Image (cartoon, rainbow, N blue to C red; front, side, top):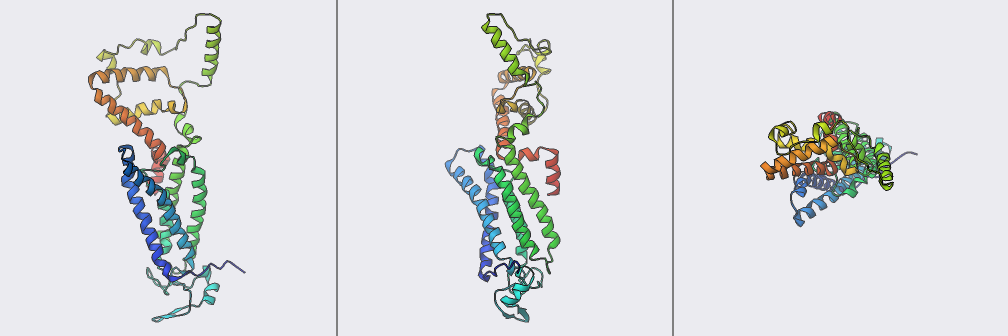
Length: 345
């Protein structure tokens, strides 16, 4: 006894085509409408993005399930006996003894023996790309990031389903190399989404942004405990930061010469990203150095006097980078490994 997959009805071909086409439409909508969420407060736009975000995964899973149910029919398998033209169609009994419930595949991109087109086997890993989602949106809310482990398990099951469909269509398949490459791209794409969700979760966000702290946070509780105990004892206590006071303690915020040594170089995007990297640890109750705090104060006070709108623009860019860290694939794309994976993909 062995595994004998059911022989599906031939009229399921149009269902597969519609499901794959719908999945592609949802992906296109998310690619272009995803960034609108952070620039528009329209309830209609948010509803469209939310609907497409939920339906995209569901339709891709549905299409993959239809392909899995139809795997015995891909490339020439059929549910009955007879012939089409000069091509003989094997009977159901013969199909049960054929590899994966199918018959020998002939032809290229056609249906071969009257079954489903052989390109259906290529669509299985293609759907993994859809499940990986676009770069513009990986999570609709912070709660979605907490489901990263569910997506990881889903990757294993959906990869197994796509592999079964592919393996059952190997005989006579002219697209083996193309499908294998699509598998690699699909796994990378789905893996990027899973890691991005993890990076935005409660467990992964501190790990992804803190790195090596400039000030040892383990000493802060002890310092504050000692400070509080001395204050309660009625002693005069002062906290002195060694190394920063001489260089940054007496900055004249209105002095252009002093500001020239503190102002960040480069375009607004570069300045905003530099500030974001230095201060993003505040989102996870981290510690920043006194140097970064005072330099930032000097920069914004002087820039606010000269060009207030530009100061607000840089703040807007900082918030934009924060949004990308939580809701897009920026945690992957901003790393060296992400560049390599994107090149391979």
